[in-house]
Amino acid sequence: MDTGRLIQEVEDDPFAYLPVMVVVSRPDEDGVPVIEDCNDRFVERLGYDREAVVGTRVAEFYTAESAAEHLDGAYERARDGDYDREERDLVTDDGSVVSTVVRATPRRVDGEAVGTVGVFVDVTRQKLREQHVNVLNRVMRHNIRNDLNVLHGHAEMLAEHDDDDVVESARVVGRTVERWLSLTEKATEIERLFEETPDRSASLRDLLRETQTAVELGWPAATVGVEPPSEDVHVSERLAVVLEELCENGVKHADVERPAVRVDAARVEEEWVELRVTDEGPGIPDHERTVLRNGEETALVHGSGMGLWLVRTVVRRIGGRLRVRDAPDGSGSTVVVSVPVVDPDGADG
Image (cartoon, rainbow, N blue to C red; front, side):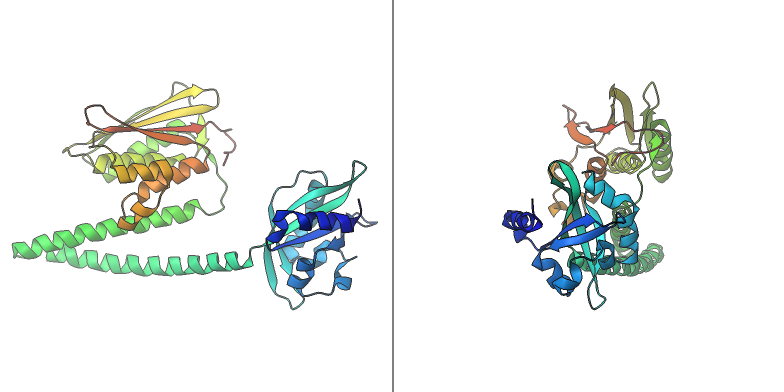
């Protein structure tokens, strides 16, 4: 198959109507990939003449970091058909950086891989927007948290006033500030969750014990009972966020003086473990149940449901599933979380 026909077939595909750049490459005498052909979008986006592109090594159009990744086995993986989507930064003729996500597949002639076809999707604008949002988010959250702490301090002082009306107003302000401080903490946890950090494994028994300690320290009147599986298993350490959030949710919504939550864990299949978090509260409201079920964000406008949205997001991220059951007499609810067992040396997801 000649390269012109290959490019034409890619262009004729509906995917080509997206703003993508296509590069056909082959190894040179040193085994280093060289551009054999490309579509017009590639040369136009980078600002080069086609004559300066064709015949040039692919790495010449990458930043130093992307070139190192490209030459460190990535091309061989692509030629072997073992290449997923990866990020690569291209350099334009004027020195600007174009951020892309590339998918490379082998190019075969008579069944033999003679090179690759790389499809680059330009994500520069999205990455810049994400960076701006992250900076704004950090600045705003830092300033808001500082101001909330100031308000909380003044509310505590006003709570010592002789006027009962002033004291009551101070309590209202204090509760509101505490709720918003909790939301800023949740936002920090969500930000940490979406950072590209390795997901490590942890002993489920350890996670249960740590959850019990953390919740009982935060809510001295509460009791958290845990029943670990008969044989310890390893799960994603991110499950700790889920367990703590569900237990705290059950404690703070219970309309009793000494609330209790119970967590039962059992291995239900060879590769799965099931956890049941049962509380004595009035049950999870419909709008928050929607957050758990569908991940809809409308409930977050009022600040409620953010913790449960975090629960659902983490469970899905680690490859698990969840469901909610209410007690028949309305005396509480049970959230059932099923997560995969992972290797003790690592975690999936």
